[in-house]
Length: 376
Image (cartoon, rainbow, N blue to C red; front, top):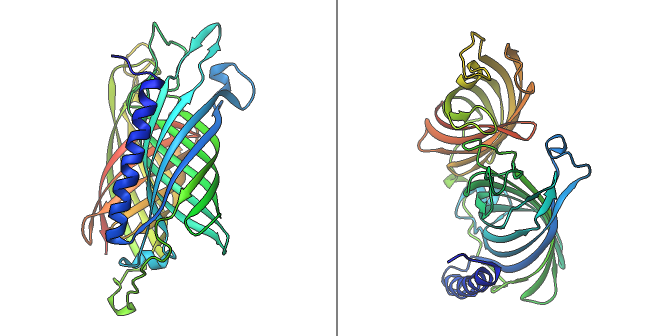
C-alpha cells in the first residue's frame, strides 16, 4: 500500500501526542523536560545551482512542514553544561511537503520528506518575557521521490532515500503565560548523501516558522559542580587523524573510488568547551585518476591544504567546523577552497574517531570516516 499525505499525517499526529504523554511522565521523574512544541514551516527550496537548473531567482519551489519539538534543559551535572550557561538540547522531527515543479518541460518531483534531528540550543538573549537562541543540529532524513532516469530525470538534487541532514536556526520564544509560549524562527536545512550516490546536488531549504511551546515545569533543578571536581583540560594539543571515504566519479556514476585524508592539527583550548584548530590536510582521491572514457591518466592526485577551524567540546563529543585552502593541487579539478564539518568522539585520553563531510562551495565531495590520536 502506498502511503499518501492523508495516511501519514494522522500517524504523525498520533506519535506526537504519544510522545507528549511519554515525555511528560519522563519529565515528572527527571525534572529536565524544558519545552514541548509544535511548529508550522512555510518556505522555499533554494535554487543554489542555477547553472544546473537554468532557472533564475532564489526559489525553486515552495514547501510546507510540520515539526514536533522536544527540548531538555541541561542541569549542570557535566562541566560543559555550566560553561555554556545551561544550554538546551533537543530532539525534533519534521514532515515536509515540497511542491512539484516543471523544469525544462519535465515535471520534477520531491514527494514527502521526513527528518529526525538532534540539536543544541544556545541562548543569545534572555529576558523575562522573551528569549532568543541559536540552534545547530544534525540527523537523518529523506524524501519519497528521488532521482530516477525514467520517471524523475530532472531531480538531480537527491538520489538516495536516506540522507544526512544539517540544520541551523535562530528562534525567538515569547512568554504567553506560566506554561505556554509562542515560538517564531527561521530555519536553514540541508540534505545530502555525501556523494555516496549520484546525482547529489543536495537540497537546501529556508523556512520561517511559527508555533507554540508548552513548558511542563517552571523551575528546573540546577546542579553546581565545584571547580575541584571539574576535569582538568590541556590548553595545547596535537591531533593526528587518518580518514577513508568512497567517492563516485560523476553525476550518474555507479563505480566507487577510494579517497584518503591525513591531517595534523594543532589545537588550542580557549575555554573548557572551545578549541581553535589550525593545521595541514593531505588528500589523495583515486577518482581523479579516471578520465571521461574510464581510462587511467598519470595526474598527480596529491593535494595539500592549510586548515583553520573550531571544535565545540561537549564532554567526549566534539563538533568540528572549518575551512581550508589548497596550497598544492596539480589536478585543478575542484575549487581551491574546501569546507569540512562533522563529529568526533574521544574514546579516551588519546584515541578518537570521527565522521566528516568535505565540500567545495556547498557541493559534497566526500564523506570521511577517521581514526585519530591526540597528544598529549
